Length: 160
Image (cartoon, rainbow, N blue to C red; front, side, top):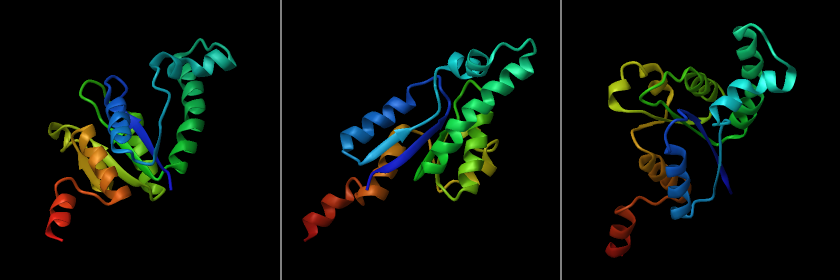
C-alpha cells in the first residue's frame, strides 16, 4: 500500500523538502501532496482565471474558493495529514486544515516549535502526534508504515 501524506501549512521554509528527502532515504511507500506553495499564484488564481476584482475581499474570496477545491480533495484522499505552523506568519489556513482533517477522522501530525504550544493547544489536542522537526515526522511515518524504530529493531535482532 502506498500512503498518501498531505503536507499543510507554512510555505516559507524547506520543511516539505526535508520530509520528501527523509521519506525517499527511508524508502517509504509514500505519496506526498499539498497546497500550491507559490504564494502569489495561490493568492491570484481566482482573478487570473475568473477576472479582476476591484475589491480585495472578492479578489481573495475567488482565490480561496478555487484553492479549497484542491485542499479539500487532497485532504479527503490523505491517510495522514501533517500541519506545520511556522515562526514568522500566522497560518490560519493550516489551522483550518488541521480542523478539517480531524473532523474527517484523518491521522493528524502537527509540527511547531515549543513556544507555540500554548497558542496551539486545541490543535495539538486533536493531533495524534506533535513534533518539532521534519525528521520526527519521517521517523513517525517510518514507524507506522514499516513498523521499525531506529535503535530498537537492531536490539531485537541482536537478542534473537
